[in-house]
Length: 142
Ligand SMILES: Cc1ncc(COP(=O)(O)O)c(C=O)c1O
Image (cartoon, rainbow, N blue to C red; front, side, top):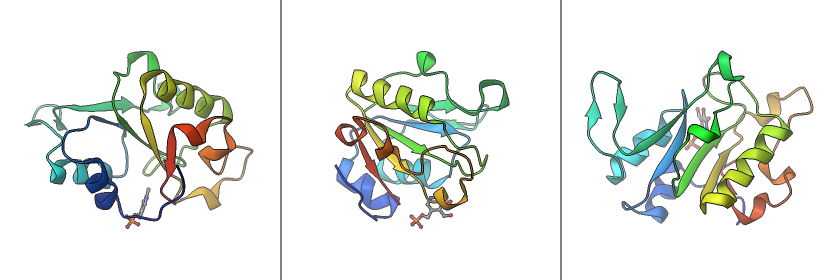
C-alpha cells in the first residue's frame, strides 16, 4: 500500500459500509464522522457520547497517550494519527512497532495520518513506513 492524499470520506468510500474500525480516543473527528456518513457505525450512545460498532482506543496521560492494545478488539480498519490531534502526542518507534504487529495479527489495515509530522522534534517516526513491515498493513494519509 502507499501514500494516497484522499480526504477521509474517500478512504471510507473505498472501504464501504460493511467494515469495522478503530480510532484513538480522543481523535480528529473526521474519522468517526466519515464512518457515520458511510453507515459503518451503530447507534449513538448519549451517555458515553460514542457510536456503537466503533472500537475506541483510549489514549490518555495514564497510558502515555498510546492505547492498551490488549484491550482493543479486532477491527478491519485502524485510524491512527501521530502526532495526534487533539492531544499532540506522537507515538514512539516501539509503540508503532506494536501497532504494526497488532494489525498483522488481526489482519487490519492502518490508515496512518501524519498531518502534523513536521512538528515532531524528538526521534519519533515521521511516518509509519519507518517501521519494518508497515507497508504490508498500512496506508498513509499525509
Ligand atoms: C489530524 C488531521 N488530519 C488531517 C487533516 C486534514 O484533513 P483533510 O485533508 O481531509 O481535510 C486535519 C485538519 O485539521 C487534521 O487535523
